[in-house]
Image (cartoon, rainbow, N blue to C red; front, side, top):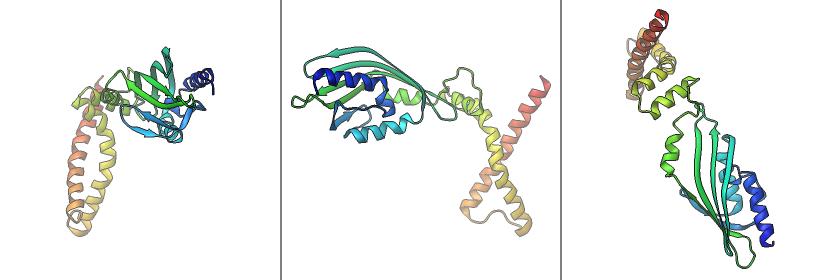
Length: 219
């Protein structure tokens, strides 16, 4: 491939947001190209496509802005901003900015190294995944994760109390039936521990839900 053909191919791949979706021809890359980012480093175009498609399959509304494109004799440097909604129950926003260096082979002209650098710490990107993209929570999951992101312990408990009530009630029900039939609770240390925790959670969640119901009735 000529240099222009390589550059045109890379542009087409960016148009497919290839490094988030795995979609793209990637004809400009050597099959054993080295791919590196703040998290990992490995070789192989097919492995790259497989890895990023796992993430891309979870994303919606992907937006990519290439705001800088610098060509040199031996490499291409790009700067980009990318975002997308992750299809988790609380629908967090995955957003990052950074750059990619495409290093060309002197023999074939194709890309032999693909090096991503992020302008934000990866840990901060991961922390943002706890926060729903919606400013106003519209589901219990969004309320729970927004409270968790903001360190609101009371908000976390309020959002979690209903599911806790739902899932602890069957355990408590089995415990009551077992006591009626045998005179004892659930057998064994493990089941006994689950039984004790379920009773505590059930009572606490019931009180919380009752308080919320009374509050709503009084409004």
